[in-house]
Structure formats: structure tokens, C-alpha cells
Image 1 (tube, one colour):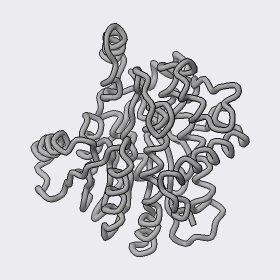
Image 2: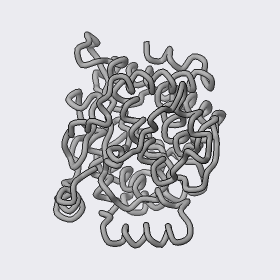
Image 3: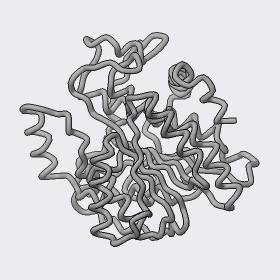
Image 4: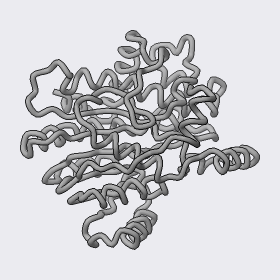
Length: 328
């Protein structure tokens, strides 16, 4: 967790420049793109010359509203942004989305923004809902897109990037002392779930998964002549719809704190777009405040890396039996 001094610097003093790397002719997918942060991300990508932008969201109507709002500000051509349905809580929706995405002529950038912070206990994918969406849902979408990214790298002599939007809160996640054979099963027990911890834990699990994934997909010491990049970025505390499910006094407290300390959504978007336009120097790594940041000790345990990858892989294979073949 950032120190108080670091928090003050990143939230109030840090100047975040606009990203400048060109996206000319590139095809970009942004999941969870209809919210404020997603819209700001797309505005930058429009400005940087993308050839095709997929706004992936659970609600087509809200996606259409977001598209209209972005077009009004950017004056981009009406066929640049496409709204596709994607519900991370629905395997059929994910399957349909992935099949459609793999039919694209090219795919240069995938930004995994979609996620939740659930305070009411619920179970999907046979685990607590926040972990289900942010971990199982995210990688159920991401892994099947890797072959298309690699194909694009070879065909267009470019370096596609898959960026997972993370959070510095991973450093204060409470990891269970003994989660048993399957940490996801462990959290089907409501008494073991702390709603304030689940989001932080989901971001920690994302990082462990990313670390392992980067060793399997075009490792830095590999010989692949046209590699891709997978990385993660913390956009710092900024205006998002992440607390949309919060109610009561908790909602009042979170909104008050956000009003005082949160940076504008555009500041977060700038950092995300920057991460999504970097090169191999960020492969398997985590970025924050515009720079690569070393993983904290909590995310540097090789045994946990292997355990979480094995557990998550088994969950993914149950939902998509051929999913790991995408890593070959």
C-alpha cells in the first residue's frame, strides 16, 4: 500500500501527461468501456488514431449512450466505435464475444477494465462474486484472445499489448493462511468473506496470474520474433463506477472520500492508455504513476504463483475445455 507521502504525491501533485504513442490503424478492445473511465480511455485512443475500437460492455443500451457521448466530444467517424455485448458473469456471453473478436482482421490492444467490487455476498462460477468476475471472468475472456494478438504481431510486424487494470490495494490484501486445495472454493463460505478485502485480493490474484502468464506467453528470454506484451497498471485512485453496488452509509463514506481525493477519470485513463502502448520492457510487469513499479513482497511468492495458476487454470478449463491451448 502506498505511504501517506506517496498517496499525497500521486493523488494531488503528480502531473500525468497525455499519452502520445500512435494507435494508427490499430484495433482496440476496451472491456467495461461504457463508464466514465472507459469513455476517457476511448477518447484518448480516438485521438491517437485507432482504426477500430470495440466498446465491450454488459449493457448494449449504456454502451450506445457512451458511444454517442464520445462521438459528440471527439467528432470521430460514426463507424469507428462499435458496441459489443460482454457480461463477465455469463459464459455464453463470453464465448460469443471471444468468437466474434477472434474473427477480427487484426487485434492490437486489449484493455481489461471491466470489474466489480461487490459488498453483498453472492456466488457465481462456484466462488465469491468479486473473485469470480475479476479473476475467472477476466481470464476467460483474455486467454482465448492471445492467438489473435500473436497472429496480429506476425502479420503486421507490431507488438500487441494486453493490459489488465490493477490496483495498488493488492498490497494490503489479506490472503488466507490456509485456503485449502482451491482458494475459490474457500470463499464460497460467506463467513470467510470480508467484503472490504475481496477486491484487494482479486487484484493480488490478478498479478500472480499475470506473472505466470508472462512466463508462458512470449517470455522475455524467448526466441519468438514477433512477441506480444501482457502487463498491468494501477491508474491511481480516480473517479470510476467501481463502487456502484455500494449502499447505505458505506456509499456515503466512499463517495465523500472520492470527492476529496479521487483524481479525474481522465488522469486514470492517461495512465492506462500509456501502459497499453508500451513495449516489451513492461512484459509481465506492473505500472503505477507512469512508471514500472517493483512487485511488493506479497506478490513475490513463487509457491503462491504456481498454486493460484493451477487453481485458476482448473476453473477456466471447466468452463472452456480448450482454453489452455491458446497459450501454446
